Image (cartoon, rainbow, N blue to C red; front, side, top):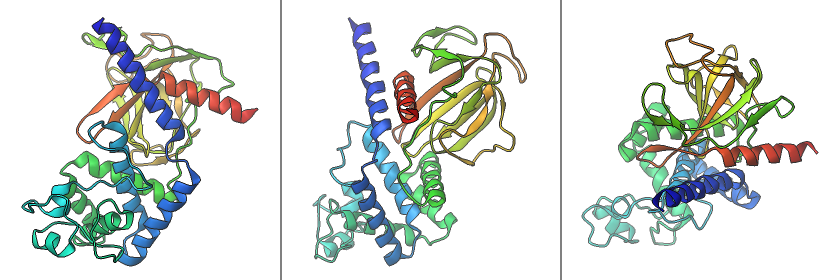
Length: 328
């Protein structure tokens, strides 16, 4: 009974992330609202809009990944904790009085000039964030320091700066298009193998879906994202990891090789060839041929504290079907 409950829970989580992945923040009205708010903050605080957008996007992803945070009921995902907003010693954790908040060293600001510093008001929240950031300065290094002081987590800083890099390059926050990791016209097969036991290198579970294809079949980026890792892993062989704007980490392993010139920190987009199918891994660098050629594709979610694997099968099915529909 317990095993059945775990399987159902895992299925539900994977299906939820797949649904979020397909439809995440692609509403044109919401996108327009967000861009307008970010540009307003940029104009007033003289801080590039894509940094504010990168932080807000990270906050959106935290809400989607955690049950202890409320869903956003508007275009902005930013959620400043009450103790930060009102001040750690303020007896009123949900204070909206700007003068009292300032007295208790809270961050909350009255951005829209209505006399209240309301964390549930979009412009007040974004103005508070921008005011905090610029208090450290406006260079990229200054912004990194401000983010570290706020989140106390190197990974959060890296993810946010990656979001900002993507938004700057494409001049939009609407970057949710996905692609199937191998060309649809190639010969391939796959099924759900996430969670299946693996024995090489010690007892462990399979954290992905294996897509079987011939040597040399192109492997494509599944999303807009930034390359976080590239190189050899004794389990995954030649592998590459890409993080998208929804804070999902896309992992490609057992590659035969990489596209020439590809490097860590580079921006990629859906359908961009990043390598080819191989059978590398299970040994020191260069080990190959211990299993049939295939792409191991994994997906991981970060919730601000930890990162965990979830079944990518349902996302793969959705991307595959969507790509087929768009070709018809």
